[in-house]
Image (tube, rainbow, N blue to C red; front, side, top):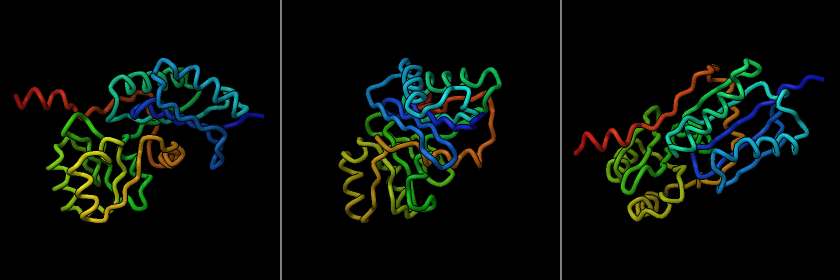
Length: 211
């Protein structure tokens, strides 16, 4: 009997997070913080085996597009494009910042903070996605009145951010090891396209201009 399963891959954070789903049912989830892109094939094979499924059962693939790990994004997106190249399954792409916001209680009150480099962050706030300094990020967050942060371990250790969280009683959600099942909601709102491009928000370009 033919099956129609969903595969979600996130290689934009530390390591690789992957999930296989049958509608709302979770067949297998894996979160490997020490894995790199070259381990995606083996991780998918082992996950399919645990799910009792074959690659031919997968009909939709969703991958995060960044911002995030440069190498992870390149390998993750290329891997998913390869899975869909034959036309046997549809490929979907979603911003990592938009995807992580789904872990917040309310998208309107939730911002996402991921470190880009020391003192600078990728900030997802409403429809905005920014490469921004700590001070500017906190100013924009205060103006928006965000009451919840989805953030990485670097943000949870940054003195200015921790001070802001305490002063404003902000709820924090650690993003590093979260499962990817909430990302399946984007199958309903994102149109499939075989061509997916990584979103780096061009921090290297920003640095060159500032010199």
